[in-house]
Length: 288
Image (cartoon, rainbow, N blue to C red; front, side, top):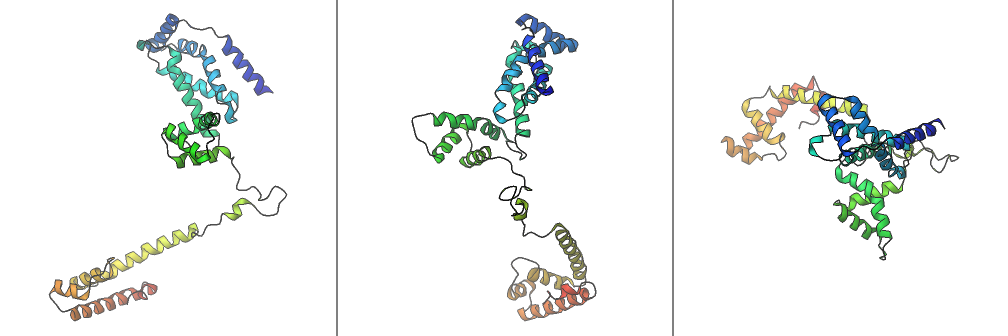
């Protein structure tokens, strides 16, 4: 009740604020711009609170408090007053409209749903115009299917049909808590969260695997240092590339027979197994 009374009082004060003539508005804007006159800025802002209230009424369908919308619009109004350039010979109301609307739209997008949406300009346009366009298309003589309606809306707003379908589904539904019981409050079917089990490893398992993998890479790197240059070359070409080179290819490259390449590779693998046996016995099983 107190909130309602405060909102009515704020609206009453705004409606009683006098209009500013063009010359007076220009003088006040110059005083604020040139002399940093805070009172002049506040007077300009207060005289345009009617505009804020009028625009706030257009956003009431999103289910947010009128008082909060007015406050957000007032922030946009003050931002417009701070940036207004009187030398451009534009009425302040024309300039402030964009800032007021932008402030209210950001507030709606932040608070309409716990799921963040409408981050791009195209998505914002879709969010705020989808219902209006649907209502207009539904009033026509044509009997449009949902697909046809989505196609026309996508073409009108310059977005994809998939974006229209996703946003339409979001606007048609409501947020649901993961702790909400399945089947109603009296049901013993558990919570929604119980049905979102993931097959991915647990965080501690992921960290453990990452640490073990890094440790294994260090051990393997140290073990490779025990090889000769030719042994290293053969092991890298045969074992450490996605498409391992053949014995024949390496024999031609090194100027030796493929049998000799095989012998060198076998000896190099034995060196690796010996070097890793004392530090990482599990890794030696994969070296053959």
